[in-house]
Picture 1 (cartoon, one colour):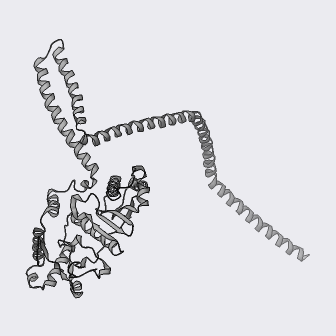
Picture 2 (picture 1 turned 180 degrees about the horizontal axis):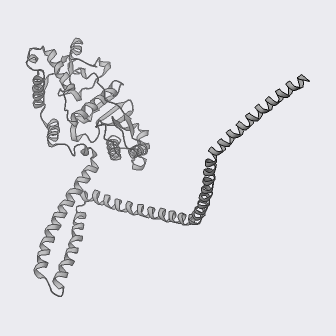
Amino acid sequence: MGWLIVFGIILAIWFITWLSNRLSNLRGMAKKYAELKPKFDSLNTYKDELELTNKELKHWADKYHEMKSVFDRLDKYKGELELKESRLRNKEETFETLVKEKTAGFPWLTWAYDNYYELEDLKMEAYLESKPHPAIKAAEHHKQISKERREAEKAARLANYLLDYCRYLAPWLDEYIGLEADELDEIIKEIHSAWEKKEKEFDEEVKRHFGPKYEGLTPTEKLQKKLDWYWGKPNKSNWQIGRDYERYSGYLYEIKGWNVNYHGKKGFEDLGRDLVCKKANAVEIIQCKRWAQEKIIHEKHIYYLFGTTVEYFIENFRGEDLQLALFPSLARKRNVIPKLVTTIDVSPKAEQVAKVLGVVIEKVPSEPYPSVKCNVARRTGEKIFHLPFDQQYDTILIEEERLECYVETVAEAEALGFRHAYRWKGEVAQIP
């Protein structure tokens, strides 16, 4: 009997504990429900908003499908309009280009413009003279002013056309447009001044730079100082920088066994050919461009290089039946390659033009190189070295088979038995 009482007490305790836990869970769930109810209400509201938005989107989607055919027609009309505008612009540009190109060769085009404007002025004069209250003096005054204006406009148009025509024929002129007057003067002086004067000025520069100690140096040391100053002096003109890059490009060809003719030494008469390089039956017509990095080479320079290659071909292959449309393949057959060597980028259009015309583009950074030319005189066999500022430097070709070479320093050249080139004056050679 006693054990039944114990069992009943245990069962009662368990039931009370279970009931307590159950009530505690129910209270927790009630509390959680109370916390989540606002969120459920918010979700229901958001659901209603989404349904409304979906209805609106469906409405606008229906509208879009209704308007799609209209948009398609508008796009078609827009494309046709753009095509017509493009054709009109091309015609206008073609006409303007024709006028600019032909005016230099046919000045009567400028006069035709002048005559057109003269007719317009005559109409105004006739109106002033024949209107209900004639203005004779005003007509005479207008006539005089119109004549002066027409002459001024004709001169200005002719000058502009000539300038544009020259820039078209010689795009390298753009390199000198916009330069300061002092720099232009320096370029002209560099090209046209006598070698004696240039060497004297260069000597004075070196003496000023190195000071009194320069006079106490040996002849070898003085020459080396002059070479160091040549490469290290600041504020070189664009022409000097370009010439040094041409020489470096030529050096790269010479050490590979090419025969290099330095056309750039002719200045403005180089016909756009800085280098003409020959090896076996191959010829490369090279134009070198070392410009500021922010610049870019455009297609007109490709056209110019192609044109001077055509001229070279005509001069050297006179028996060929030359047709311009077939020239790229004909040039490849003869192994004549136009090449642009540059330190900067070319425009995408210039790349396309180069590909069509067979012009090779090679980007070559400028680097220091051995610039002392050690040459063996053909007539006397005398061993002579030339420095970049010497008179005959660009005419000297290095032939390794004749034991000629490039070296870096004056001391190296003298150690190989070469002496410095004398200054040439007519029939008399003078020691500098």
